Image (cartoon, helix red, strand yellow):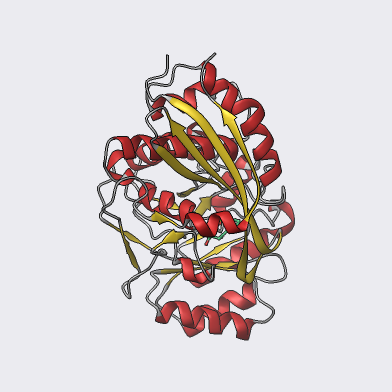
Length: 377
Ligand code: OSB
Ligand code: MG
């Protein structure tokens, strides 16, 4: 028995060229190979989502290809056998799968979207969101020169974004942060290292970052180095924010109990979907730990899910959810995500993710697809 009446799951890989390459400490993305999911129920209702797994296993272990395999071979069959009465049941049913949370999150968020459409309400309300407007920041990749970086930061500050995040790595850190801070003494500024530093080797450099009044230093050390992050936090004035280290509520609890961070970045895919994201923000909120919504260079569908999640009360800092036009010439949702001159995004009023889907564009850029039957036999 399956009250949501799940009948089939469609996977599509689409290819979207990025307007400009995006460089982090772990590599450069030139285009995205994005897995778009569509779940159908017996009454013809549909739910859309995006799996946030990147092309290569450098951010975490997952990839577009690994997610495809895990979804078709394990997630769909487990859900077919399970008793799925509501979207809240999905993550429990998938608990036997170790890791692979971006694959799980892809399917889980599609089922939440389906359920909100059946309930005829915006996904953000269906999740319990209360903020009708979310605060938007930008993440700016490593650049060829500090002059180019300064130009990019200037453009984003001028368009109204509320917080600027700079990617850093060893050898490209203090000098660029100093330049941006001198040019913009008052902006909310943070840095993201994507695990590029090591405590014993880099403590001096990391301590120098304390001079720039940063809002946070995101994920300086390796994902598993939660003890070293705690040691580092004790020696810094600046708050550490964890991204890669937090894959579930238990990780958040461990990090907060150890004192490994004072801020948490929540990414829907990384934590396995809306239920876990909601649980983490509630847990953090009770402990006065601010959270914000991270990004994985999503297309409009993933972006819309991020907007819905960001309306939950615990999301008190500007996130990395920015305008579609920063990344895409043409997005797969209509209208694209737009950001006001005050750096805000208004939560949509239509049911589900609240944006129309450009099906013909999706069809045109699909490179492979597969449909998995989910009817119980
Ligand atoms: O660590 O936040 C990150 C992009 C790809 C992989 C990891 C990260 C990022 C970003 C970009 O910082 C955020 C976005 O605008 O989507
Ligand atoms: Mg990050």
